[in-house]
Length: 431
Image 1 (cartoon, one colour):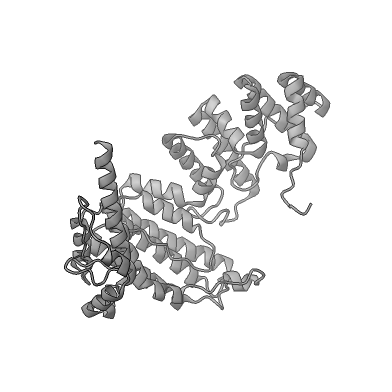
Image 2 (tube, rainbow, N blue to C red):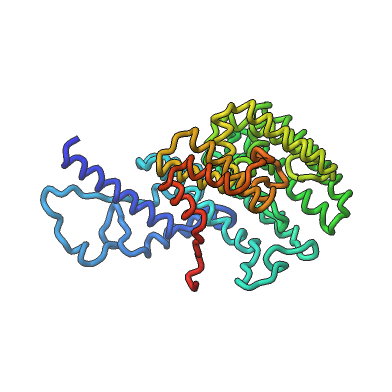
């Protein structure tokens, strides 16, 4: 394609886009009462400055109308009324007919539909809270929850989504219903987006039913025992409903991305970068530890209140199973990713190109030093059992362990390691 032809093509596209954008801004919406008012489009076009007319130059600015046509320059006229129509489906077809790409057609139609529903959505949104508002004002309580408003907002958003689907035949995501109760809403939306497109609406409806049910059944607050049972019932209903529409593989994928132990595991192994198969195996083992530690489904940790010795045994078994499933090298990657000290050491190893054997030795030595300095809490996260323990107990004194670590790293790397661990970074600009 030569340069002159390319310039001509781009210039024509720019004019068409300009006309399309002008039409969207000046024409009335196509939904509800305004959609049937065809006569409203004509005055808007006639009064718009610079509007193009195929038969007359009367609507052009005076200077443009008076200017003689230059020889050899092709005349261009465009009548937007031939594209504009209150019928959304026909409007989309007309946009395609004038050569607009499908992505632009969808964007224009979706924006137009969104503008129709926007006033009702804005009216139902929770008012913004001042920056120093109280916790009750920000999050609400069981006495201030506005369930009618929340459910009406969901209905409006569903109607908008349904209209887009009917007009364009495409799935357009919508925000999942949000209640004043804390939930991992972003994880739900991400997991729903991984499902087959034809199943997303049904999955979201099931999940939202569980979210709203959990919130309303806990308001006013239930006793601990009643709360556990209510949660167990809702989770059982949700899982049963999902299994009716999802394959076993799809259901497992959804659970990995929404269960609390799954999202926590994903956060802790970012530096490990596990493959999909590795993460699926790790989640299966972590979920078993979750249940063996008294967890109820994927969201209520230690709900059953088991003895501490039983919980500790489940966490130790998790580490044994992970090491066997991952192998020594990947298990070391997991160990280092699962704690901040390991992440710092991995960064040091990358900076100085340390051999893997040195990294493994330094990692275990430093955890033993931390154990002696601060106790078990410094190297084991009491709770989900995902952070592995060091090889303990040790008979070596701290000075001997530190000397071994200095020797393993070498003098210059040891100094850099100490400097990095002792340096405190302040993010407050006033200090």
